[in-house]
Length: 603
Image (cartoon, rainbow, N blue to C red):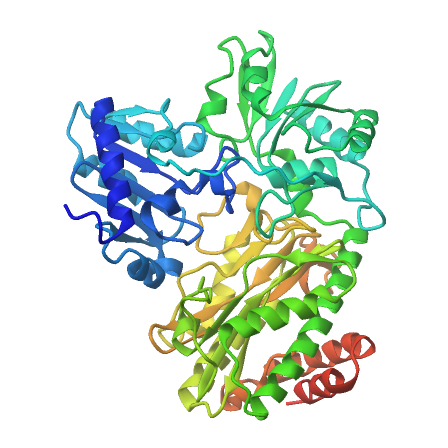
């Protein structure tokens, strides 16, 4: 094999040699770390390093004579391009939660053979499902080896960014109160102890933030809670002494990051430990002594942090206004620069828009890498322009911009599509159908407790009626100065589960799309807040919720096919633009104000 053509081939060869030395026949590499995070520190970017695929979600499986990457439709085009020459096949799966790699492994291997997977990054629920399938086929799953340590010579170390407190008016609930709420939930489960690994849960519970993961203000830590102590396992030196003293006063003790597993191993016999099987790895679960009863349920903090308080919701509204003002300044510059004939690339969009956000009060950083995709690049839902690969914004077509910011008072995420030059009736039709789906969901009313996946069809119905669809979910939960993607709710084709119930205070994205590979992509996204609504029946049929649209930015009416819009839909759009104009006008001036007034004119 010629390994000089593509470094990935050389890395795969190293893996196969290491497998042979261990008497194993396959390696499974998930996109995960010991916290089961979506976005990973460099130390755990093994799937990316081995495959060359840079998307945030996929599973890689390597055997002695085959290698496959399992990715969903958001990444198919990107994966096909990045896997060229690697010797790795792309297996297209319907959703990121699909488990096709398990069946593939069973087909590839024979009875008596062995699969390696690092139990320290393999989710407990995923490990249980994998182990059951392999065991049924007579295949052994070994989870004690981290093969990457052997084959990855320049592997990054652990991040060392300092931890800081989220304080001031934007942090309205003290950490001691949050800890008390979690202990009350533990008592309802009959648990004496509770182990938490998910970094956003820990950041929320402790009112701490960090910078260990790009775009998400979180830090690497584990947390073990009992009736009297909350032990935070975090890297040495990451928490300043003064902050450590404040934490101690609120019932949080510090311990070294590496001591989390030993702490679980020494839990007293007869105790009851609460863990979330989807938010803890197999490696940590295996540390729990046999004499400890284990209760599996969703982390209470996951439910609590999804429900923003009234005070938090008000800070989010303020953050949305600042974010909208930044976009007004950017788009005013952008349209004027194009009119002057300046050459603008997708990279310029990222640079200029990020700079405008950085000027706004309370801004901390971006909430994800900006997606600025022109024409065919817009058809890649998770596209990112890079210095070695980007497009110039010239000629005719559609520009999709998906971007967001982290503010002390909230997290933003917005997508808009803008016409460049002359656009076609086909562009307008696609844009309007997507907008109809977005408005359909935004205008919904539903009983409190409705399982969020049930709402998905509202956004898809206008597209389905025309034989169209999109491959990603319609909506994800959004954190409060935390991860831009959070649960438990998801508006998608996911199988509904009890913990996905819609409750007041939840913030969810509304982002249907339509993608024509090689041509253009359209996605229109606002963030929505669940709020109670009075009905003529005065609650006789239960409490009802509706959505408050939080995002403030015009939707470009130049892309509309007005013949496809009903009068009530035009009224909604005009009402939205009226609210955007009223909220943003006091925050902008000059060319930005002129642009705002122009783009919010009534349709």
